[in-house]
Length: 308
Image 1 (cartoon, rainbow, N blue to C red):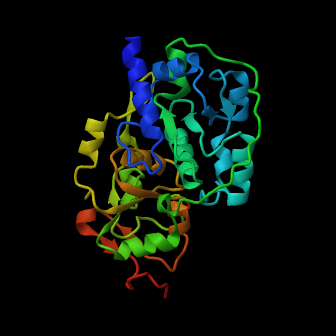
Image 2: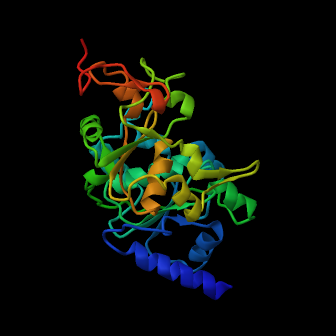
């Protein structure tokens, strides 16, 4: 059994070392596998706890470093925009990350905050990032050891490099609306997509967007949550053309990160729109569509929705 686990970890490590990963089955790690890595004291492994600083102080996975997901937002209450490159460079340096770091991120077990942090780290140039499937809840459920003291960290001199392929903006999303070879995925619940509810001033969705709620990526039961199997994810995205560039969005670029992670695992070329619906729908110069996809009503008449 141990041999099988170590063989899998060796293969995962080898794949993580590929500089330009179009990965499948390598972006999540199970608690038992992470425990084995910790026991073997593998070099360059950095574990980031994306829960609140208080939750981290209460207890955490041994060796984990506190990296609350809240730090990744410029102004979460407004539109979810990413923190500035300057701020992120400071945070990544303080966390001791280097270009060679093999990073494992985890949250409380709901998985969306870990997925967002995964995406943020990829945007800012980290190439070897994985998510702990089931998060801290799964770690605790299996009875593995926890720590109560803060990890000792040696700051790094990491220099951020923006991976523009992974970050969508209002401008690139406008272009995607007009491009038949790009697909926009709305990760909000269906009632938000058709315009029954909205977190912004306007209701509906970005024109041409299809609706694949973030919840479809996660298998949730009464005790814990796990990412869907690759076989299930292939079913979820079976109608999405593999050759298309994909842009995901939600209200603030948070839950759509779950779609982003799933699509990365399936090998799609995908970017997540950080400011998402709160930016788009509150800009009255941009078009929105409202209603069921079979009977769409476009709110603005011009192709890019010039506000009259």
